[in-house]
Length: 140
Length: 369
Image 1 (cartoon, rainbow over the protein chains, first blue to last red):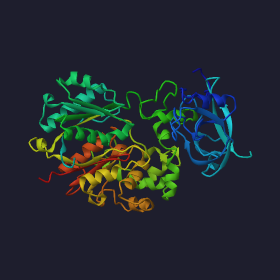
Image 2: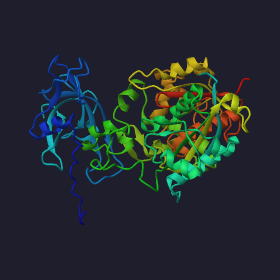
Image 3: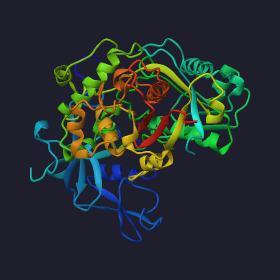
Image 4: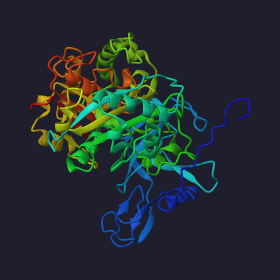
């Protein structure tokens, strides 16, 4: 790293055959969740078979992008090259049911709380083909 | 399997921030100490058990020690949750008759080597098969250290039980008091107050302050598990495995299986060793082991019940937070010392002592025969 203020660049997750669609959809500005081509059940994190009916007919569908914070934590320490700390990490229950991990942004950290209604937005990573869903208070 | 096997020998190296030697050497030193403690030799070893994430291969340890042959070797998953079920695996092997003397080992340079508590590089740290697979869903959001990776679901659990970070100070002051009188502990002679705890900086808010987090430690620990019948002929008072169970899943059921095997309940425990990488784990353990109901946790711990002189002392060596983070294994050696009556912070007449990591539980006790 060069001298001066650090330039924080969000790291891409490790992509594999099961999860790639989620992160690649985010790069197109879409929140997509694995859905079963047979029974329609949603599954997250993605898995190779439908955990309800065991069908291998994997699809994914775009969801509303709205949800509710079910848990959060403000990560202060240790420092790292990728994020300016502290940062708010949240668990969001989507309107369609599945829970996803994310950050909440566009809100002071001391106002984050369980139960808040949120909506999705997206942020890039150090891989131009990979982005991540983030959340902000709904109706901002 | 009740009472079939026992821990006959224990060994541990010095715990430090810079061991100056390889993890293989630490594993070998602890193993030789455990064998000597039991009165056995390397020729007796025919089984080995360690963690999936331990860097020391069984065959390298065999070559180092001169162990001629193994008939059983196993690695236990899920990070530090593997500690208690190492005893379960070794006991199962002995009970099945496939091994006679199982050497359990774990050694790590968690401070001087790859720092355990650091923020991991998301791209270069493969998580598959390490028990950290889910961490890939947290890394791109800045949860890169164990403290963060393990804490996202903690807050609703705490709120449902009326717990706040201030309450954890009651646990921490108690184990720092134990550590203060344990020469093996990192925090030997360094007790703290509630105010000290509350003024330590946030690591993960509003759950963990600095003093809620375990020590990054260099060191090695080893155990020898054999049949209780055999252990009676060896050097030490056997710490008999009265009950042991491993459990994976949303409702793992393991504490009740271990109690059923032992024919005991939580009320029969004289001391409890509960894996405490971070303070909340102890509260979760007290609840899942049936020692205390969720809504009573705050008052139970604040009353001094699990501190020195309490009705059920917990983590009498200072715990992983006060003594050192040997990934749970130093809580097993402490449980054995309590059963033998040789602990530095000995609980009077301790006959039944538990060691748990997550919801995995083993119950050790004195030999009744």
